[in-house]
Image 1 (cartoon, rainbow, N blue to C red):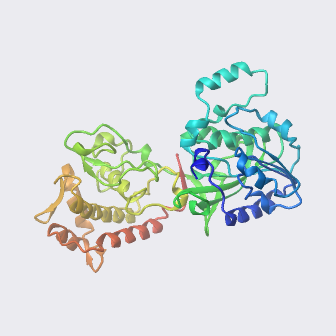
Image 2 (image 1 turned 90 degrees about the vertical axis):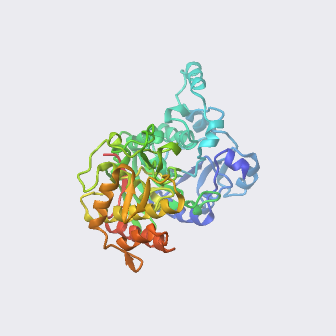
Image 3 (image 1 turned 90 degrees about the horizontal axis):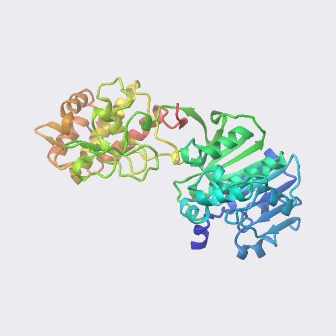
Length: 445
């Protein structure tokens, strides 16, 4: 296990490999298969009577690989640490030029292993200076910080030199979601490949991967200078079909991780769905994450009933890691997007979120008395008037067998029904579906 994690290797389960093998056969009709990071050969064992090359860095799996289809040639080369070039691999492995040449792989990924295996910038400069007479391949061309970048980068370089073929690979879905760390990799795919098919799996379809992690399988056909668009990429998730769409992102509208302003409440950080930051409001003196609920942190104004900073604050507690409603697996690597605040149901979500946070505060005292209910009125830092006025409009909204007005009285008397938060959570989940919040994969406008 430790050796696998060190090298970023997370083996594919048989059931997953069986599913994706059928996609490769359907869309690529392979005549030759290359699996450069084969592990124990789970992916390629479903292909018979096809020539191919399988390789893995781990010498312990080589005997297993040699027991596979006799048409496979087996290698034990390190494609990252040894700093090899794609042209060398093509010659050594005798890779053919073929319209149905397929690279089919689950490459190593992960940030901890990358720190050990990826080259430093200075090493890259030395390497370029000493070897500029050769066909250039450098892992830094695809960025750093995750093993998926150099390992998948090698696959892309091989195909570009062969000038024909398909790239079929698994990766953390975050790599394909327009995230800055993976932008160079994504740009290369969109520039020189045509998207053919995509599907998203939960981490439980792989060994030793968190079940909430989104792992994508996608098929791309080499098509030099095609200049594909990310919005053309459509992914299957269970029974749903998801497509990228330009949607306003919360990180473009609200400043996160700013220095706390004295005597203010702090909104939690929520720039990405999987940001590992607690999604509760707290007092500035105890803050090491998030930013002050203050108009200075508003980038884009919202024309709504509440001040913009309150909309951003409460939305930051509604979706994302550790939030009221969590998130659907495909969104794990995405930036948090905003709803259409003109939709009346969004204000209903905000009203429920306010009550949820009042209950949470009553139970935990994160805000040191600056959020409370006293004498029938809500205290919320410098925004008490706004919150009370807003909830008057929504006091009849149901929670359990009572309404918001009743729950607020019960919060004050410390007699909160045990299942109140569960009921609010469920109602918000339904409303998120009704407003179509999960209908598209968000990317920046």
